[in-house]
Length: 176
Length: 451
Image (cartoon, rainbow over all chains, first blue to last red; front, side, top):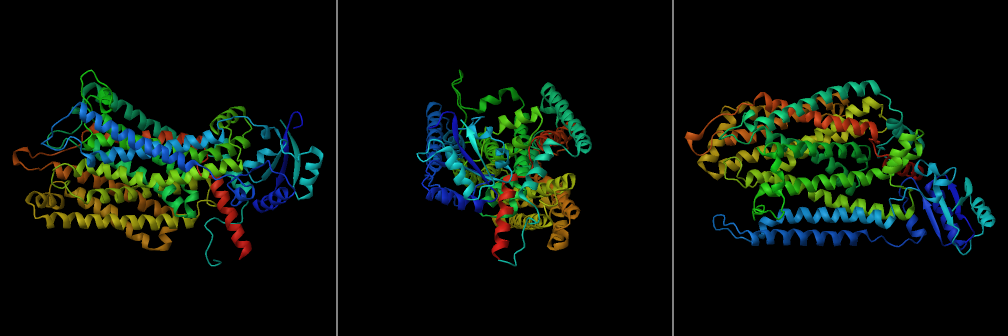
């Protein structure tokens, strides 16, 4: 990896241009890529060969934990302080259903949202791509493709020229 | 698909939408009107503070409640506010899952409405406690008294349901907001805004990897939020249905409450949509087609609530139970018949105007119908509470309820508690989802090209 360099950033006008360019960049042999878009672009994950996200399993783990905690809590407090209400069962699972359901959802939702931020490495307030001149439009109406300097095939001048060749509106090097 | 009209006008660009929506917080266009609204809302909030100080000093005796009507304004407004909140979650979560594109212009402020409506609802049971400083007794902590909360009681379920709902709504709202906070951060020029949006956006950079995980988390949370809404308001109805009071002890209560909640909530969403769109000139994003859809949903949920009214009567008659039938007669012709007929009148009569397309597509007419629905649903909750309690089993315990000054002042005060944070939210964050609007606009343009 060249010293003090994060990668090469190319700007595109539309999601279609970005998809086409990403395909070409992959075909040219670049592997260490990332794209920055104002909204989720359909199909980009397949071209970039991103692994399937595992948030669903995080949510499942949260749900199981929530249900378990809720049931244990309700069984325990009724065991520790049994109150006879007209002879009704102390361990009334039907009466425990509401709180169990609520905590299942609470733990599952929070696990997914915290897990999403955690896996994304956020919050991280600064990041190399923010230092470039045109990146502020990635949240507006431009679509960016970044070839990492860690890529085996990366060579600053050559990569920039290649990106210009496949129709980038602008290209620049990202200081690392 | 060429005959399907687009919900967002395609003669606008993505960049323009981003600028228009981020400019609302960054270069606030209606400072004067906002200040006037804020003064009005703050006055109401001040009224709430005075009422609460009075309440905490002198106790719940300052309200009109007494035996037998010991649940009146506090629980009535609790149910009313919570119901209003539910429409926000339904719009953003249910319609996200069904792929209804028209939600994208409405979900943000509808969710914001949910948050503050739930806060207004949530303070009422605490105010009603009598000794509100013991609210922590509702939580299971190892108390020196050796007792635990009673988990077989709907009153205990309530606190878990409402707190879960508030937390999940807040998390869902914030997750959807992160990409828009990043958009505002990148447009901000003044130092203060840059820091505010820079910190709250958590460094979002729109990476493809991040979007992938974000989408999965967002959609799955939406999938959880829909059953959550249904469970929360069903649980609220169990506060009533699990008791033996005639007029409450009925299995129709959970669906009847949930539908009524959605009905009142969609009315408030319509009011906010019409108001915001005229304040900020958002006709290009909240179009007449959006109002049309809102009108249809309002009409549909209203008719379902009407079905609940019919079945409530049927339920009482079919039970053949003397006290049930007597409560029914009290509702239709008793001392509080005005609440029953008022609810019917305000809920269902102006609503019929929504059968006409021209009414649904006209902002001010939709607004009037919605205001009527909000009043009607308020009367309905009053009716359910008071008409069941004022005459129960024993003639010797029959009595009446008249709201006192402090009942009213607390209620109007909660409107301030809703409006103040809502107005602040309008001032600080984009009130229409920027990235979802752009995504939809892009899809529409794509379709147009292929057609």
